[in-house]
Image (cartoon, rainbow, N blue to C red; front, top):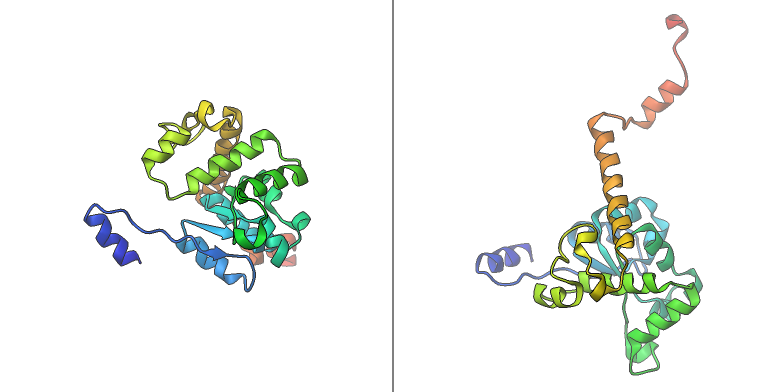
Length: 215
């Protein structure tokens, strides 16, 4: 796929991206593969059991399209779904349908997902609009389509990327997401540069205090 994308890119063609079902069930290690290889993933339920991986997905801002109604029928009850926690922590979350002919009852399955999520989890209008904005950002739509729905500066970072007339997401929410992520990345960068990350063995040695011969 990498070779094919490289060839298509050189010829001015669009490239393919990997958006697998990942972390819905089964072993957790495929979430590691998803982290390294995917543009975004679907489901991601098992990230709730792997805080380190969840943090990496947050830092990399890898999108996660979640389908709570499908999960409720197959793997995880609706009230245990981690979507609201993921959203509050700043992961890039969107709502999606999964097998709508099997799990939904109306002609608007995506509206079912939004309406039930809003009622069950008491999501605010700001939360709902952020989910919708994320879905467009994560999508495979062309930049032309994304500019139409999100504004001409959608690819930039921070509140300048947000056109509230189109997204209905307050600038303060977008600024909060951007600033929090930036601070997290700065903390990690500073820790690496100043060698503040010590191994467990070094921490144990320090906690034991100096040797008798050194006192």
